[in-house]
Every structure is written in structure tokens, then in C-alpha cells.
Image (cartoon, rainbow, N blue to C red):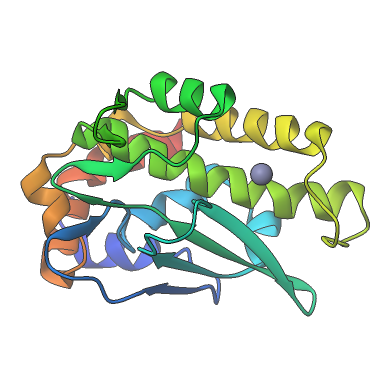
Length: 210
Ligand SMILES: [Zn+2]
């Protein structure tokens, strides 16, 4: 691992994908950094990544939608609206399927406060789930509806996307999601990202070569 920089460059996986973060106040944190997204190239096929035009992370507390996808030209733009304050996110729905998902990912629902308490790992895994699920919509659309997203979201499609996300999560190395709150709080600064990727490079490469 002598040439860390070269390795880092080889992790470039955004394929002309634009990644952006809405500005948030310092008491909120995002779960996925640009470097976290580097893992996508080891998990999602290049042709699937190529149709994703951009990923935008937001922290809008007024919407109940944590993930959405829109079509622009022949490509797709994904929006992930998931951020935490004091290790918590808002409980967005009383729906059983939603709460079961939160439960599955290890979020602890506090009905009194209407908040979900997360561990760093569980929150990060859930954020990846949201992202994989939205990527799956693009893949589904390309494969089954001739690239037409309009009117999407049938229950067949939703379960297909959940299955795709489950498969993708299985390929996610443990080391990639295991991080501390302190580290998550510093997710965006570039210096930290470089340190983080170096720490995980060995695991990452092992994964890529597997
Ligand atoms: Zn969906």
C-alpha cells in the first residue's frame, strides 16, 4: 500500500456523476461522504452507474420522502434526504412496512418523541439502503420499462428495488459502515475522507479483488 495516492485516484467512480450536499447547520450530519460513494463502483455495474447523472444529499425536515429519483434527458438524478441530529432522525410514517424497515436496520423508534435513535453503523447502512433502492429504480426502468420513469413505483417495482438493495448491501464491506459518530460528524471535509479511505483501503481492495 505504498502508493496510496494512486490507489485513491483509481477509486474514482463517479463516472461524470455529480454529487452534491445541501448546506446544513452544524448540529446535523450526513451519513455518506463522497468517498463512501467510491464503493459504488465495486457494487453497482458500470452501465447502471453510467445512467445516474447525480446524487444530491439533502436535509429537508418538511418532506417525508427519504429517497426519490427523477429523470432528466436519458439519465437519472437521485435525491437522498436523510440526515441526523443528535443521532436521531424523524419517524416519517406510521406505516408498518416503513417501521419494519427501520427496525430491520437497527433504528430504535421512540414513539413519544417521534424520533428514531440510530447507532453510527445502523444509520450508515440505512443511508446506503436508501441510495441502493433509488439506484435500483433507474436499473429497473432501464431494464423493464424502456427507460421511461414516468408513473413508476408499482408494488412489483418497489419489491424488486428492495431486493436489489438487499443484494447490494450484502456486498458492502463491514469496515465500510463501521464508524464512530465523531467520524460521521466530519464526513464531508476532504482531509478526513482521505484518512478514512486509507484506513479502509485494504478492506476495500480485498473486496474489489474477491
Ligand atoms: Zn421506491
